[in-house]
Image (tube, rainbow, N blue to C red; front, side):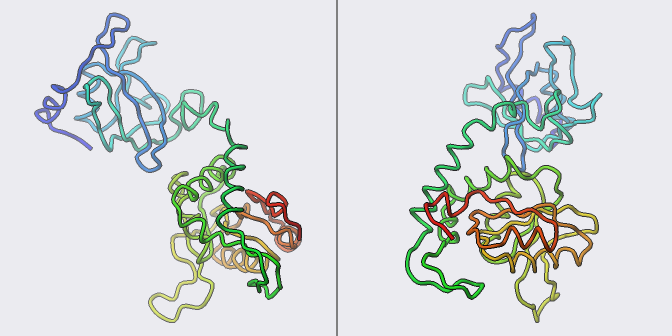
Length: 297
């Protein structure tokens, strides 16, 4: 996003630089990721910094610690490309949508607000367990994909049709499991909304795995870009015996990529973790097990 000098002057006329720090008239500027919506940092701008940001397309602040103009990333390389510029109704604060290259925080964190982000994780998990109990758990006689008979069924697909439920799942996964991976992957059907939601929150690309052969179009078993050497986080809604997950891992390996970790929303504790560890030396993590739901295998 770049404006002409005339367009920048029009925007600057709407701003109120009334925060007095170090003898300078400044305005609060908050940066967030334009892809994930995550708040990255808070800093200040004077008139010239705001003008340079708008006309150059690269975010520039007034550094109160250095007492000088500061183009974000000029020394570290962790630059911010301007994608959007919003003004508070009173004109005394700016919200920047940015394409962040590298880390936003000088401490090496992705966000300056990372320090306490894990507080409340257990509360999120408990809320998710209650949701699964109330919206996805059915008791009765069922036949599972594996062919096994079961006295209960977990319809996670139904629960994730509600955006707030999907958001909780994505938040838990993004907090704990997206480090050290390049791509998120999942098989159709139930995993796709989860994978897409995690990708949006983490900023990572994702691929979709087809379960059957496709006789039309390109006939590709995997939709999306997966390259040799890519480190993959494979996701699914429910893990039972692990057979379908094993097939997904093998499909990914055929591209030259490798699966670093498998995550499911619920582990039924019926052998999936043991199978993946034995056959592929891959660990299975879960957001919850049936034990959290008061059930046993």
